[in-house]
Image 1 (cartoon, rainbow, N blue to C red):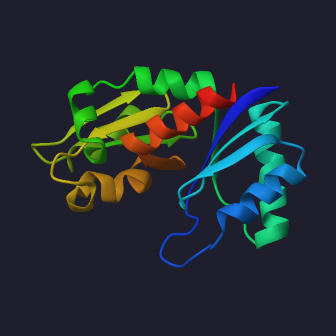
Image 2 (spheres, rainbow, N blue to C red):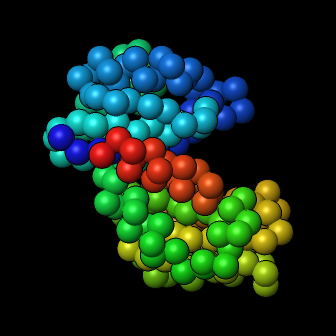
Amino acid sequence: MRTWIGLFRGINVGGHHKVPMKDLVTVLRGLGFEEVRSYIQSGNVVFRASGTAAALIEDIGAAVSRRFGFRPFLVLLDAKQLAQAAAANPFPAAQARPQSLHLWFLQKAPGSARLERLQALRAASEKVALRGKVLYLCAPQGIGRSKFAARAATLLGVAATARNWRTVTELLAMARSAA
């Protein structure tokens, strides 16, 4: 059994795809997962389960669809993968302002041409780096003002979900306590 971190995209955003976290926890427990916990209302879960990421994503997607009537995009990382993503952060100084540092967890690595087009939207104060299937954005002026952040998912051409540094570190702490 391994510790997994599930990052759902697009639930409880703007009144759409409402999923109470306690209900999501119940759904995951119903799949036989252990030590299921959620973090904030934006679709972050930590749990222990056996199986491959692909099989678990399929099982979770089907169960969520049955219960809530839609199938959200889900990135599933094991605790080691999340720890590696945190350790690979190319902007350690930004950790002091966790709301300014964001990580996009990508379904697959984007093509370099797509990333170059996206770079053109980056403000002078912003820093961007791609490490495997994780895109890092340091946006000192805030993510709400970032043209890069607003267009990232579309222009990358791959499914992705973003989390700020505070959420990443909280999920990592939860995963370590479950292991």
